[in-house]
Image 1 (cartoon, rainbow, N blue to C red):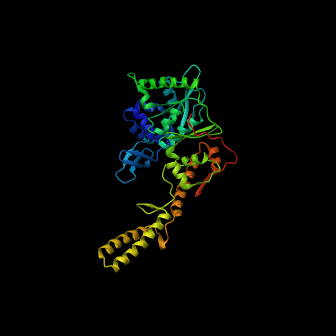
Image 2 (cartoon, helix red, strand yellow):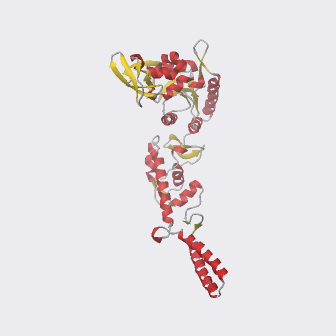
Image 3 (cartoon, rainbow, N blue to C red):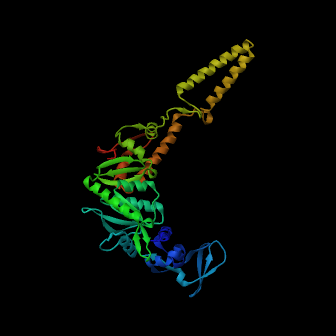
Length: 407
């Protein structure tokens, strides 16, 4: 299948566009690609032409022009160019399944604009895997749809997308889920008779997937009732045996939550929690820029400054100008050192100032992580037991047997 068609499909919002836009996007594949499009009753009011977005102005029923939105010369357009065509999902599913050797699913094609269950693949004698086609022009929405599909599905499956998925997190989730991902742009070719044929790469990938399914049949992965574990770039979460995969980059605050879940009903200072997650030293001292000095160390500095003043007085009485100058320079250095430890109005910079910044950071990170758990709302609701603050804790109403390992 022409790669340009799949690339155009992923760039087209809503899988529909004006005829002129499809023709421009498909280029030499236009005549072939139009067989997978169907007309609608709509006519475009704006159209993307070479040079940018144009607004359509109708002077008469058969006389229309496209005016550049950013200014420029108008150009005539035909009514046929403005007719909106949309992807025909049923026809697309039929073409894809026939080319890849999948069995079409019985009944009405299920589609919600993000993914469709289009067929079945008998990976082994015992297991028939569903085949899903995921399409969306926004990468983030597409990846979320694939994650939801992998979570909601039961057993191994095949996921098709128009082009390759570059997100390593999604690829890891596919592997963990015993799934197979195929990019149609690399899986289907047009043969000499303009028919469609599976590529050698796709044939090899499907054969490898069948071997994965055989391994899954002999040792199916059990879902832990309550799991909060991280495998590389991906979090594997389950609550009451409902499973969810979450890329770490989308919910870094889960690392804080994991340490709290492992220590129920314990009060953990935010500095200590940060140390657990990042490996940094606890922020329990006063920052001076180049050094970190605790209160005991500060008292020693003050004592040293007092001793320097005494020695300066002695050197001045003895007429030792060299010693007095040396002691004065050392006193100036310590004076500047102490000055950097003080805030506005000569108040000592306190541990609490730094702790408050850390508390805000950790609290916001935890809240964002909980909010991201829309695929596992029961877990999100349970995590109200996580109590943020300068001292954090996890206080569940009943004990939960959390599993923090990856089996």
